[in-house]
Length: 130
Image (cartoon, rainbow, N blue to C red; front, side, top):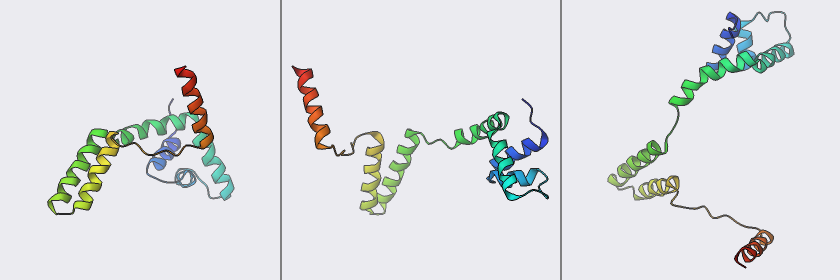
């Protein structure tokens, strides 16, 4: 599944945050091409299975390094809470602690239920109980 030099350059350009059209311009001769043609060719490359696979391969390590774990998130919020409390910024400390609780699942967001849905749930509960 080897890519051509231009295709690899296109992938590298995409990874470096160029748009597909700009990546195409950076790696292919576009002097005599209309803008619409460049967009179409870039789209065709993006739809190419070999290109898509290579982009996934290039993105995987970046995505893995950027992962935020629940543990690291909670640890960071705890650190911010401690710093806020130490500087007597109690509002920020409370907010950090509340966010830690939400991330940990200690708080449940209130969900509004339509009256008809609530009546249906009640009927179902009665049938289950009876």
